[in-house]
Length: 437
Image 1: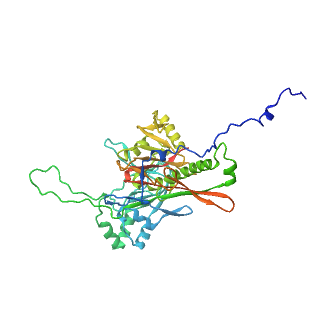
Image 2 (image 1 turned 120 degrees about the vertical axis):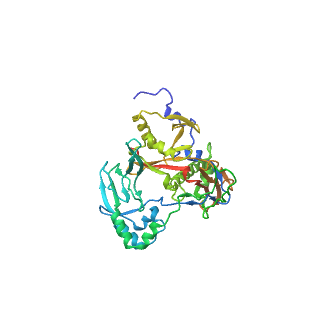
């Protein structure tokens, strides 16, 4: 054994001062949604979105039940068809549900001609003939969507883009059911109000002194109210730890810092995924579109852009952004990059694509891409919060001391209140069933 001639580093470290970092946390993400949303102050705990009166005609989706390989539409869900809106005769709805025929289609196979086609599984494209005779895609429909209506005269041709299961209702079957129940015939013959907002009577292009129409703007009698949702936790710190081990770093302050970071992460998660107010659950059904082939292509992103008068941000999971970049490379187009809040992100048509891992990915490798317009001036999407809280730690986050119990543990309740509101339907759109593999 060689004799040492000087003090070793292991022993020397016993007298040395160690340089430390503050506690690190890998759960922290950029939280782009919290940064790009304009925040509205909600004083009374609720935010009411007043809108012009709107007539909604059959823009929903239908649901199905399955026993083995047999699929059946839920009878009451047929009321999502425009012509059956408000129809309540359960016996007739049962007969209509039994009148559908199930078809299993391979990719590229033509859907049998029918009055109504319900897509139970897969993806179907409604096609037509363009001005110069070429086939053109008029719409893409996926799980729960319907093609046609009971009042349709000429069914549009359609074909399966993926292996699909569809239910079809033939004209002969519909006529037989309508001939049996007079209530159904009367319901189908009644005129439907045009979808959209209540009309404002106007006159234009006239000359002379005609009598001008009188009008008024009708309001929605039952506007939606968004209540602030709470995210809370109780932080516990032993007084002995706070007293003896707070040099050089304050233990209580570091515990609070990391707790607030976790609170903010959960807050953003709820803004995306909460079933009551989350963006993924509150987009209008007419603003939900499907990819044409599976992966997100430049054509799909253009379609998503075209659904609103302006788009300020895309939001997508990083893996969905990577899938889109691969499609851009395959199509030999290259997105720009843009700086937002100090971060460089890719952009499509000048609209930044903000990454967020809070947007879920299903077990089948499917995700969604959101497009939104923001701000009250643009009738867009706005975040809702309450600031000026008692014992406010940072804007919108309250840390209130609850006391010290008999075990000498200090407790603090950490709270934040938030929600998100979509002011008009076209402020938010979603590209669904995005394949990221």
